[in-house]
Length: 314
Image (cartoon, rainbow, N blue to C red; front, side, top):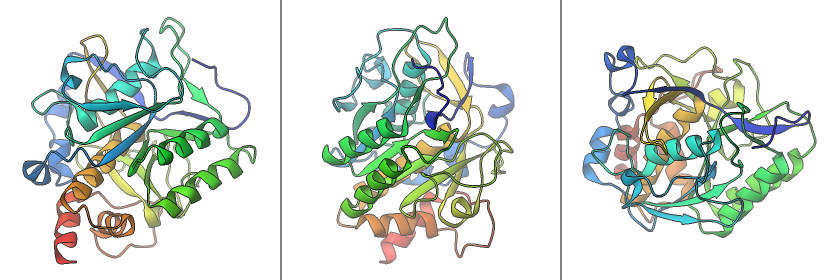
């Protein structure tokens, strides 16, 4: 695990709280899948293997029993399996569980039949040293290029650009331009600094930035917001989300890092059901399902079922 650098860096966008089965307060509020109207879509499909999601994150504990049936492939980069108890591994496994855990597990398990392409950018280190994993923008750009070349249809980036500077931003812009040109949808966490503004990632016109909301659908105060996020982004559950860990525990964490894979998973199910739809059509359906955008820095809540209905009409 690399220490946070004093130049522009990419860091996890999560707030961890390892518990037995999620917080009691969260249990008393609406199920996050119901909140974003994803439950009825999940009843129709679990996805298709020819829908490929690239997870740019930490390594994933592929030996986890609730991932045993998942179609997980490694994209060459950093080591793709968990060897140590590390924040990088915990985070990668957690996000993988939201997407591809087996149905019936404690994780949301949105699209377990889709293919997950794991491209780690965060290295493992012992959790005894509490340092948040980070990577440079150049390393992230390389991971995006690698994911595109590996045939990804959707990229999930549950990390945010911190300590922004112009260094490395050109590489990121080039990689995101390539994704747009190749029709690869990029879903990114907006970040948890409580800031108003945008980064080299969230202001790119092809990216779908995601902020976190609570179990009532209200934006969480520490989510980054801004004009580009409000115009093109979405809000998704980011409070007390329970998923998988590498050690058998059920961690609960929140933040925009937890919110992003709900949008990614919804897109994967939509692509699985409408395999001939273009990336632009899928992106328009999911971002436009809530109706016309108001002039606000806060994006609307994801409505997966409305996006499905929109695609049915096209």
